[in-house]
Length: 614
Image 1 (cartoon, one colour):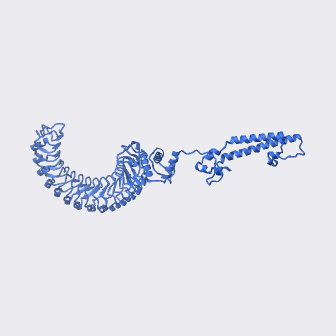
Image 2 (cartoon, rainbow, N blue to C red):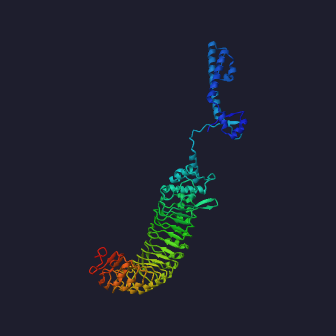
Image 3 (tube, helix red, strand yellow):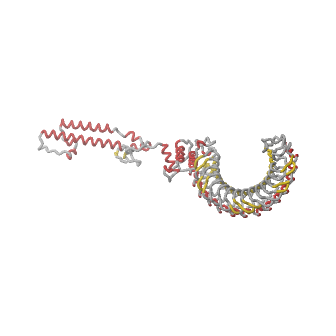
């Protein structure tokens, strides 16, 4: 930058004014350059004319002109004298103009004193660069604060839009003069989420991006800490979020709860999520997220609940989950962990109560080390490709209430050690290749649901099943059971659903079944049952469906079944047997009945095409 200086005798007198009003000197002291030049030129012309009339000595006009004009009075004649006089006038004019211009430029350029109070006055030449607007200055200042190590072009569009909104439109007052604060970081992170996840289309979030505290925005929770309020929870489940999570979410480093389930999130989990070291609840289930679970998740050592289910995550289940020493509930279901196995580190999670990895294409065998996660009450591993046998170490988990291993390729017998699970309430083993149920099943006295259909279970139904007095649903259908229906089953007074169809059970239907007063559905079809229908079945007051098709039943259908007419019976299936009579007026006017199937050769006055198969 160029500058010129002039010393002024009046500078000291104006020193006080300059300090209070730094622009006052510039406004009052700068003269008109054109006027100065015009005055100097006019004065020089007048002096030149005067010298032509009176012929004063040249030294009185310009003493230094001897150095520029050489004379020889003795040799020059009168004409030469006029010529010399003209030249002297010309050079006088040139010198005067140069001096005037120098004075004008000096005064215009130098008109302000230094900060040290000296008599020197300096005005710098104006810059030709365009000035920056205040809002652009604020935008750039925020960028340099929030992204000190990044170039502006490397910042995402959503993050840049968030900065512009804070700089230009946000009327909420934040003190940012001392540098980046958690308040600024949080407000910017939330605003970036809004822009990146289609905030304008969110549901029930009308006050986001308004000039109130972001702690008062819908579904944002804050708590007071030493330096003010901080964001501790985001509850944005089913709010219409769509797009990928921005990296700025990592700046919400006081978060303890992040609820983003049931939206349309895509992309991968940002690695910056590892900065949320206070996080206790992480719910991103039922979205469309993809990619591998980042290893940075291992930094979330306070995590207590995590649900990643219902996404498109791939790769291996990261071993860093073993670092979640506070985790209680972990759900990795319905993802694409093709060929992955359960990492051994999960066995070290001694506070883990619930582990769900359903339908995630896991393979190999069910690991025995799960037996060391002794706090487990829920173990759900269905719809995978596990093979081999059920490891006996699983039955060291004596606190289990749910054991769900259905739809795998498990083989051989259910281990007898299952009897140790005295708190087990749900046993789900259907759609495997298991071939035997041990009598020790009767020790699982808390059982309410047994689903073991579609296996290869053979031999007889263990009579100890009658000891399961809390059982509500027993599904042993489509297996290879033989023998008879154990009469001990009548001790299960709470039984609501009994599925024994699709086996090789023979003998008569026990009349004691009529004592199951809470029975809602009785499925005995496709067996080898013989004899007649016991009249005691009419005592099933709550029954809705009775299916006895495809057996070897004979005789007359008992007329007592007509008692179902005013009850809840909706479906009665009697076809493919050897009945001789008893259907003539059965269940006429039974308003609840929607399906009645019987053999076509039988007389059935109340059977209609809409009800029956004939």
